[in-house]
Image (cartoon, rainbow, N blue to C red; front, side, top):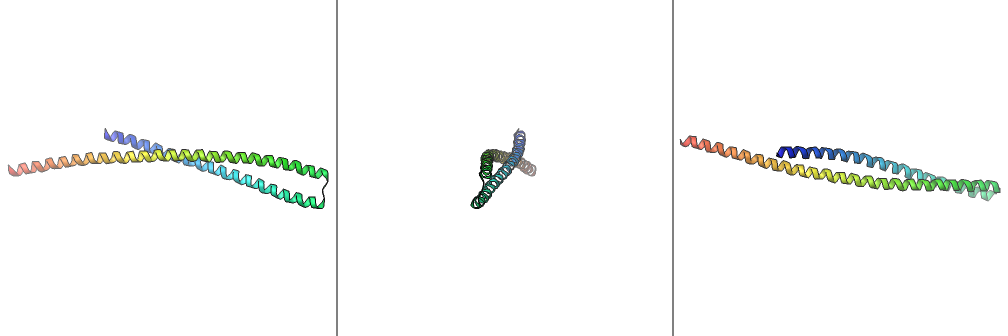
Length: 149
């Protein structure tokens, strides 16, 4: 019976290891998506800064009302894109947080099964050692009986 429970524990441990691997992959994917979203967000911010510099240079030289209105419309759209990317970035950060928690939970589960497996193995070893000792004692008793007889 002990070996059956040991086998079940080992099977559960193997499943937990697979869960950890899947959780790690999901976490890596979420972190990559977060990194990409952050890069796009930063790129949009830099892009906006460059256009502000360009607008300031053009304003110094003089600009027509229609061209200025076009710049304003462009900035509105760019600001909307930045806001949208910021939302994406917040979502990816949340996803990383969730995936990290799932990975940590699966790690704890795996470690628990490892501890239970080790305990089970130790118990089985003790039972086996007691059985071996009993056999050795019986063998020694038999030898001593045959010598005295």
